[in-house]
Length: 165
Image 1 (cartoon, rainbow, N blue to C red):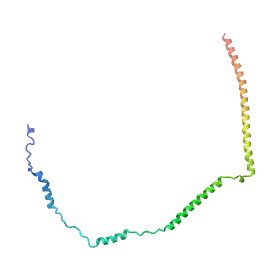
Image 2: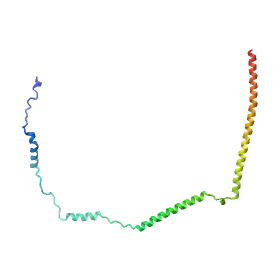
Image 3: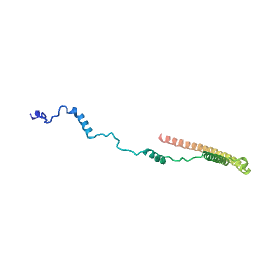
């Protein structure tokens, strides 16, 4: 029962036009408290900007150094010539070290080279001959051993058959 009677009388009432006039009243109050003056707050001295402009330009403008273009051209050309000459010199020196001319060889070196070639061929031929002889000897020995082993096996087999009967 007590719950039915709750919040019926709040005890506080707001005038009917309170919320309609609230914005107007607030704006009027702010306008009265803070009256905006239409005058400028600060004054600058006469010819202030002209004096300041001169002082600013004095510090900000720099004297540009004049750069003589002919000197630069000569320097760049000399560096390029130096690079080209050095690269040609390196190329020629490498090629001269790698190539051997026939006139640079002595007759003794040529004879030694030819002897080495023929000796290598002879060594190879001798090694091949020895390998063929060894393989033939091994095959002959293997055949004779195989015949002996076959004979022994057959004799043992015959012996085993005779014992079983």
